[in-house]
Length: 125
Image 1 (cartoon, helix red, strand yellow):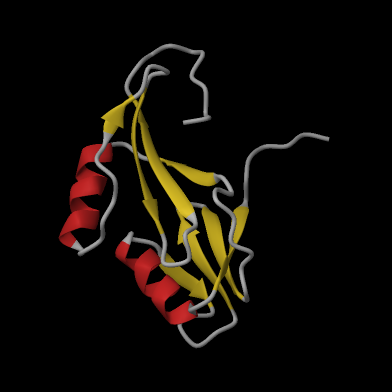
Image 2 (spheres, helix red, strand yellow):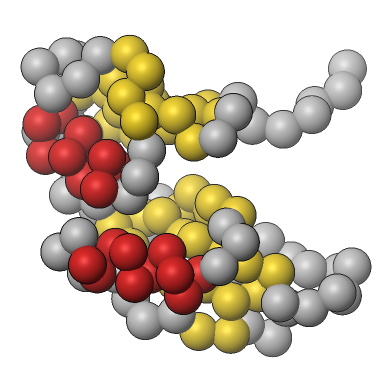
């Protein structure tokens, strides 16, 4: 068995309309469902983030989805211009520049750009 990547990640949301608005502000496109649906798929390049309506068990920290981008600073600026509140970008010792933002349900997204040619980059930012 070969695992070639992640096809989609599914997040539970309490308000589909607020969640879809948030993710479309990030630049993702709805390919299935939408604001009035109980299940929505948003395209992220060739991959997807799914949103499923339902009560989410709130935990202090569940983890994060890390999305690779070409320019962290331009993505960060685009989100701020859209009225969102991402954390400030920062450089990490493992060779990435990144920032985090949480959706309306507290699901954490990280946007990361490789800034080092070091082949030992960890993905636990």
